[in-house]
Length: 70
Image (tube, rainbow, N blue to C red; front, side):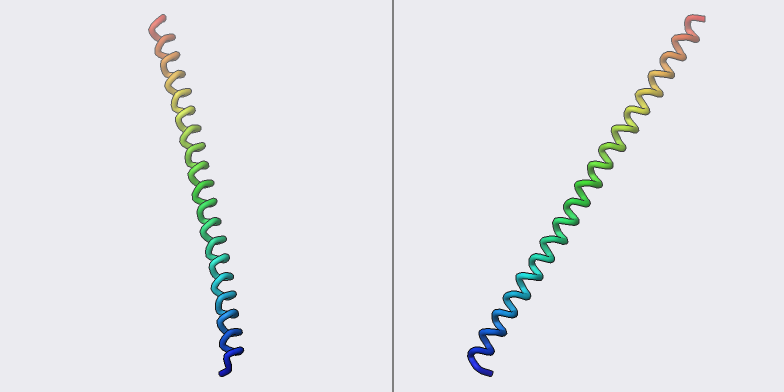
């Protein structure tokens, strides 16, 4: 194997490693975005559930007030 072939092989290996690194970075970014979106959805759902519970509590209090008046 000549020196030129060794240099070409080294450059090809370097390119392949860089490409693999870019692919890995893209996968990490995809996972990060997915995790952030999931966390946002969970927060939204928790907020909706809390609002629904507050509404039900308020309705129950109103109902008790009406019963108390009669």
